[in-house]
Image 1: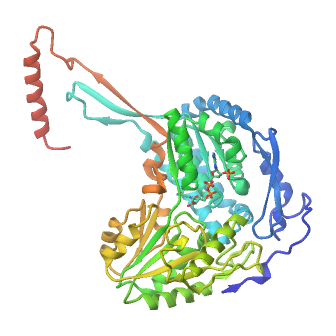
Image 2: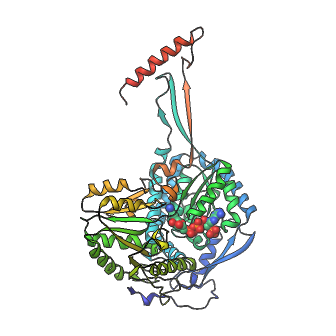
Length: 540
Ligand code: NAP
């Protein structure tokens, strides 16, 4: 593993002034800019501010105002007041705001690339994935939401006489809870379709990565979004989670499966709807005819992007026994070529973990797997020489069922490779998990790849790619089966989930009951003949 020692930040003073770079990261925007962004948080007087630290340096970022329960409820009141005016705009007017936002994000990306790197500790190329996902999602809903939301005609109960249509109404105020790992992209993927559908939004980003969400919020204002249409509150889930759940007309949560289950139980009490984007233990299946070098290179991206702190990251690889050893050698080689570093530039291929908790889980999983008989092919060590939270990208073989990481999500740069002897076994092992978020299949035969893909129980499956093909295609739904979630983001589904469907039918002339004086038996007979005739008509 190479490292970019030159870009390792200096551990300077922890008493930074407003003119100093955020988190003491060389080249970062200043503390003054961070203060400007945090002033966009509309509340924050109820609880003491919280200061997170930059993963690259361990130094403080900025003081974040924290809301309390009562403040969050006041924010919802404002969002509710703003909702009618926003939904009264036409869907095309709302689309135009999103299209302007897509342009602004691309034009101003340098600053947010810095912010995402500083807050999440990831490599710049991984931060760029967030910029591109944000621009793609804003463009998609900027172009297609009016069409998806348009009233849809449906065949009426009595042809010609019953005119029926499906109309979509916004839910009202959508509550969105976002995690720290993809702070810009996940904000965009969840907030923008909610706004496009005519809702207003109250979002709680994670404290660790609040500046990235606030940056997008600032740009949305420049793109023409009214001030109260999207409001951001900060605070621990334990302090403001109840208010968010109780005030939301729809709850969109992204995070871990245990938190998702807990919130679902709370939301069920109110009978409001929700979507949950949760954890995964994503498999990759390498078929015997795969191009080994391409599959190994694809695995490095699939496993180590954002240091594996990506919900759709691959953590298990099943390789046909005929090519297993060669694949493991190629994977180790490509992994060792990854350049680790903390610079705000494109020189490193992998950054740092984001928090001490993450470092603890990753180290514990690798140590436990080792103790349970696994071989560390490459990696397996923290790298404090590069920054306090760096951990080497790690490839394991011989992982036994006793190891925690055999089943549990590590959410870090660790992958286990297993041999298999036939494809049915590979599919069965890929499906042998409580999760069902993402999967990947590698083969030279794309049709065969699609066949195998359809047998894997995961919300997204990529053939000859790890995750980016589905992640980048906003026109297809993304989400989890089994314990990986409920509902989908992206595509028409990711927009329509934020709406109430309403059926409106106009009955002309003939009623759907016997005419006056007509014997009901005769009516039933005539209707039965009519339904049978309709059933024989060719489908339009
Ligand atoms: P987490 O602990 O569940 O937290 C996620 C967010 O929920 C944070 O903002 C957290 O804020 C908040 N939260 C926690 N308890 C809450 C409560 N009772 N009420 C309201 N909000 C609450 O998850 P994480 O460890 O940060 O994120 C990593 C997990 O997310 C992984 O399992 C990963 O796979 C999953 N993930 C899934 C997707 C997807 O699209 N499927 C995408 C990204 C991440 P506080 O910590 O401040 O309380």
